[in-house]
Image 1 (tube, rainbow, N blue to C red):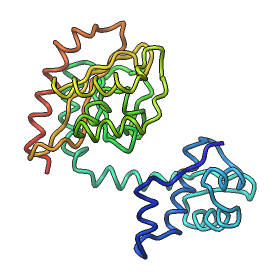
Image 2 (image 1 turned 180 degrees about the vertical axis):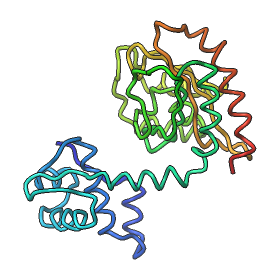
Image 3 (image 1 turned 90 degrees about the horizontal axis):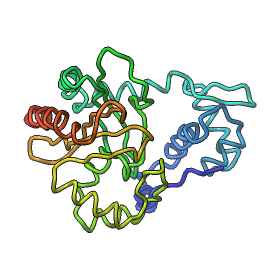
Length: 265
């Protein structure tokens, strides 16, 4: 069973002094544990995943239960919908989503495909906004969905904001696990691909993150040119070729990025 480990930054913060609150860190690790197994769990499960003593995990579970974030019967524990208030607070206060949503709605309608917005979170991308045309879209990508950054078009765009030295170090530290038979897992090739995509100003990924699905992404920049997000349009391979994606979707994405840039601070 996997364990939640502190990042190097978290470990350093703990060493540096009294401003790091150990109990809060442990409570967050308990909440994150439910995302690892994605099912109701026993106290032993949670303690093992969060890398905590059973007694500590139990006290944290009882505290979170009284706060309304966890439900349990002393044997199995699960998250409650109250946890979503944390995500709602983020989405309500996030300027990027507020600015981008109407622009993405317009692009999605014009492209007749789904348009998504993603941010970089460690070695993964997390999708924070989504727009779709009227027809049903079968993919599982939705708000809060996570994918490895190295094999997604949005991830490669976001990793491209790093310097070559920073990018090489980031790729070297990532576990490159194949998502499909098309996923590039050779670290030197992934590095070269991201550098090439950065020079082009977009990334196109063909069935590396999800079989039968391809996407094209551009960076979303704030007013001073800093890359703060990535937006993509994705489609199934039976609906469009890679060449058509560049011809049809890339201009739409670039126009949207240009309109958003002066509005993002």
